[in-house]
Length: 246
Length: 273
Image (cartoon, rainbow over all chains, first blue to last red; front, side, top):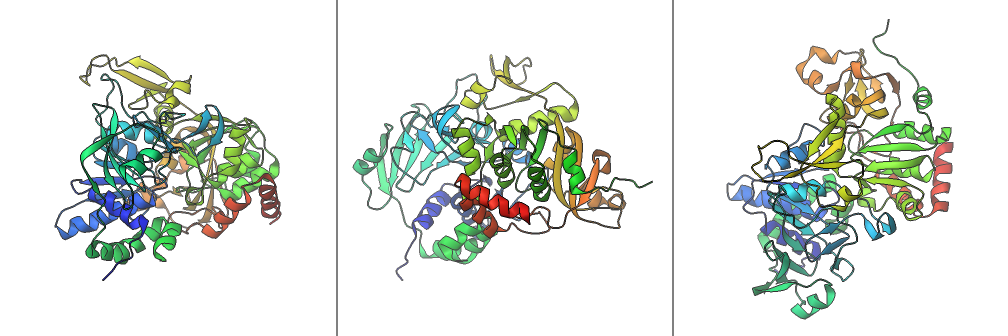
């Protein structure tokens, strides 16, 4: 059977692959694709008789917290969250992220919502996955206009966590903490190293084992559409309706 | 004597004065929209909003209506429905002071007030532009040796006390205890505020303290200065455990609020209802 896999489903699948070793994944604001990926990884873990806990901040059902909104940050600081997702209106080559705006702060030309919890989560969660769908020279920049949270810190800063991956709709990068640089490791279909280079303002290295993104197999798509889609509609109804019409 | 003061939404609005520091709950924890509507009708000015940790339509409406001079928050957004346009435009036109923060810092500053200590330390944040622009925050060398990191700097945040905090809840009991469920950040906000008022869907003839489950999920009347009944008082926002958000209405708002004219028309209709 030929499956017509949607772009969002491919990205969900890429993210789910990065969660297989986790025990607890948390998902914050405005993150339907990471939310779906976390729930997918949880369903697949269940099949393998493994336990993955998922906390979706904007869901009452898929949530492990009872101590108010601060519990996410306390729990993360205690080292009880393995993976968290962050985005950015701009992300630069040193993995600094900007969620605040474009222009010279505080006199911004374009204001975005704000930094949310990134300035703590980026420091304390071991695997931070940066996720930004738009892959262009205006999103992946040399230097962000505002640092909501820095990609790397001095040695005397308490920092058990930090960036591990960056996924866009065109490519997957790994982050090399020692070189303070991204490493291009997977390409979406129809992309080449050249197209990615042209669409990325910052410099990056290329993985010698670079490969193409693998489409989700029939079983994964079946789980995603049958079980995960209705779950997502509980906390991201607009997204679920647009992608799966549920 | 009654064990609590039952008042009207208008009487709550009368408690809010120009320039005061008002606590704002997040979209998931009981947004007092009916109160907000009345506050805008009153023509309140120069409010300073303290969001725990973010605001959606409530903050955007207050800003668009010219009621706010300053806002401290980790984000102002309409979530799935995009940017909070009245907020973004006010920043771009330089008519609103934004104290950019991050969620755990907003919690910690209120937690300091809960404990009546002058400041609270927080990890992370150092090296961000948030920290660089917050002149009211400071960094000191960690005076304890527990972390094992040599010359570790640590961020200190000042205690913040709110003048007034208003939120909406599903119900209160006959003694004025408020059901807040798992939304414990409402308790943090209340503990750290000089005055607290609550709008509720209903007042029920029970005593939450007679039962372990309901006792553990309430804000005791001790922290509450007055309760008003406001049916559907969070609309169009959700009320946890009671009703979902009216997403069509929030979408309509997000489209209208893209321009000043659209916003004004939307508000004129809303306030006339």
